Image (cartoon, rainbow, N blue to C red; front, side, top):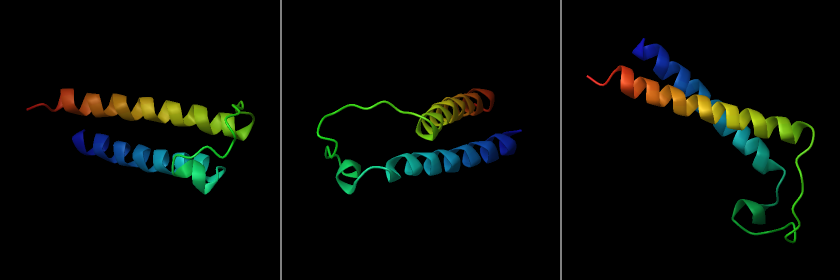
Length: 76
């Protein structure tokens, strides 16, 4: 069981890294380093960008839940 949780957490973490990098890919290098290339104008997410954002949130919640579960279940 512990090995299965570790494998699942590794898979989720790799997917999270990929999704986060896909979201940053649309921004300029200044945005990546903390700058504001958009001129301060907020924009809403639409289409694929919105789906990527929602999947990222879901995977991060799943990763946190699996991490907590593995710590609580195998505390010995």
